[in-house]
Amino acid sequence: MDFNLNEDQIAYQDAARAFAAKELMPHAAEWDQQQFFPVDVIRKAGELGFCGIYSPETAGGMGLSRLDAHVIFEELAYGCTATAAYITIHNMCTWMVTTFGSEQLIAEWGAALTSGEKLASYCLTEPNAGSDAASLKTTAKLDGDHYVVNGAKCFISGAGSTDALVVMARTADTGPKGISCFLIPGDLPGISYGRKEEKMGWNCQPTRTITFENVKVPTGNRVGDEGQGFVFAMKGLDGGRINIASCSLGAAQASLDASQRYMHERQQFGKSIANFQALQFKLADMATELVAARQMVRLAAFKLDSKESDATTFCAMAKRFATDAGFNICNEAIQIHGGYGYIREYPIERYMRDARVHQILEGTNEVMKHIIARRVLMEGATEVIR
Image 1 (cartoon, rainbow, N blue to C red):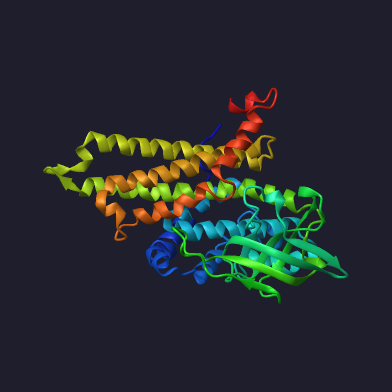
Image 2 (cartoon, rainbow, N blue to C red):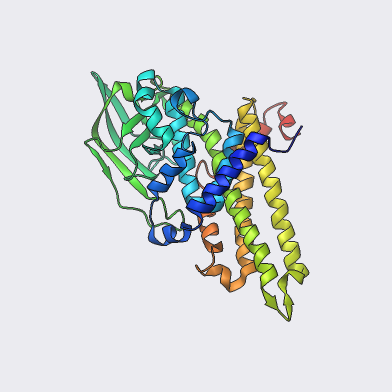
């Protein structure tokens, strides 16, 4: 058992940290304020391999592990949490297409997606199918050499600005087994995009509803076989939960570092506020929760890389714990900063706003508890907590 990163992982960490410091952090506040989607910067991340981190090397990806990806995503999120979060979504889409797609589909889209030349959006959620994703209503009906897609998706990150839509649609009325996966070019006739949502956080990536009206999609754009879509979606979400938990860690680390600096700089009652035990204890709790969350995320990533039977449970645990802890750390950082933490001159309030949604997406934290409880309550499954 070795809790240290290996030499390769340290190299990935250093590269991501340098990129975040140069390309993300100096612009994050402006992007947030102007609601600007930094496509060119995301493509620069792609030049480093960060748009296909765990996609197969044969498709142009880096072929790295989920643990490696976690290390990279945390560092990117330190620079700009919202931009890093989009990059994790693009990675999930790219992995899904390049892992389960046909040779023809990978030849057409693989290199473009893994390099960041083309960007992708993940389209699972619908107006009436959120946590209950298996109840989705968007349909894809086979008609000769193409499918006709009708329906709507909501809360789609990057929508209107991305090139590829990875869409889950119903090809049969057989519950989860009737759901299939498609890569749909974002500019096909019949696709329309709703207004850009006004959000609490994640302002530097657009979020829109997408409507499909008799959209003709070639059969070659189906990812995998008919009926495999829901399985792909759930596999994608295991990794997605580690990814978004890693983004929470990045926001929390940035908040902790800012709080440490502020406590040394701020003077009250004739001395640095770092001398006040109440704030010392607060900072100690923040640091402890962050380290605990990081170790849980790394354990879940290890489980997923090792294809352990309980990997899904550990991914749910890590997502629940790390996103709750990450938000709490950001919130406590605001308290340490007092009124300054509440104004946009300081980045703390942005870290908190961007981290809040992590407790909702990739499965709400209430759903995570359901997944965990279901496993723990299985007969003979109490070993999961040892």
